[in-house]
Image (cartoon, rainbow, N blue to C red; front, top):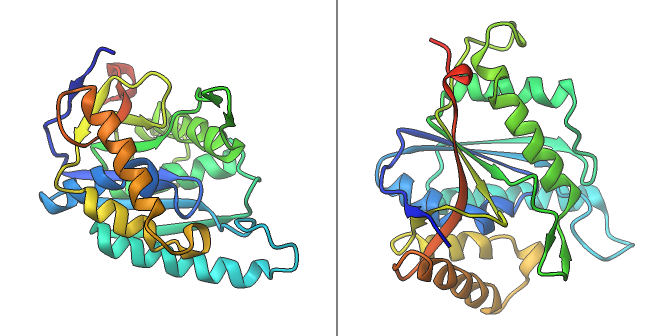
Length: 241
């Protein structure tokens, strides 16, 4: 596995993920590490999480409220500067002009150096898990919003002043090539993930699982704990002056 550690802390980072607990699992250690080192970290959650339980008699409206509270609690632990919940029903994320415009407006308002999102090309993991369609659809929508739309005044001219993102980090990738050392942020990642009690319940299993995954990623680059990404350094045509 070829790649390198990302040592630079961005001034501003924007994490855009599908479900209320996705960012914590995918890149919570990175966000916590960067925030503790002075980065302004912003978070977007695309869906409401209304289908995130197996009880057919459960009230989706109550679940939406509970999961929004979980997002806020987790964000406080990670140290994020702002959170925006788009409220799309689970399973209905589409790479359409409406979502792209919303994402472009957020990118232009936040002006991030780095955008983090799911890798839309990751479909099947280990022959046992099919990546959720919301992850894949959102990943495509984010890439379409960033390159070239957010940087170009020709796209969505009413959605703010154009902003060019320099780097995109794709999480849950089948081809990671860049890692962040999260040795100082792992505890915050685990605590933030544990806030999502509607999903993880009680007990220590989520912490053990996240710690094991971080250790496996760390071995790829010779650190104790890490999170891996597929890195895109945007070409000049997506970064107009």
